[in-house]
Amino acid sequence: MSVDVEIYVSNIIKFFRDNPKDLTNLIPKEKEEDFYKKIKEVAILNYEKEMEASLTQKQMIDICRELNGQTPKEIEIFDKVFHKTKFGFICLN
Image (cartoon, rainbow, N blue to C red; front, side):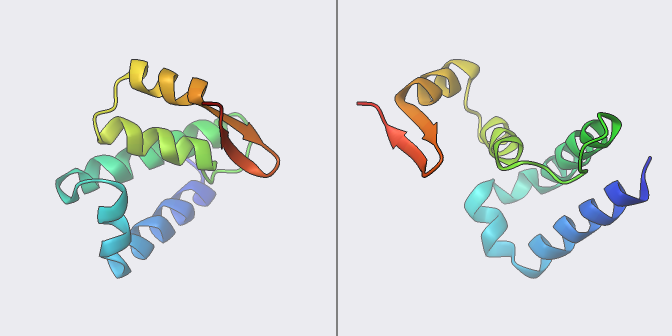
């Protein structure tokens, strides 16, 4: 494993330990360790693909969705309702 991945994950953990309210805005407190584990898994995959170890915004959102119990069907519906543009997301309804 890369030192880059370890540093990235350590910084994420430090940030959320220093700012616990920001963590609970994303996921339930009891899923904190699962959150860090999934971040590390994705960071390793990114590194192995010769990308930056840091997660993209979409990757982070996908982890939060999974830990909050959204089903793939709910995610699919969300992705069909909102369209990403260079200015951000717009609602198609």
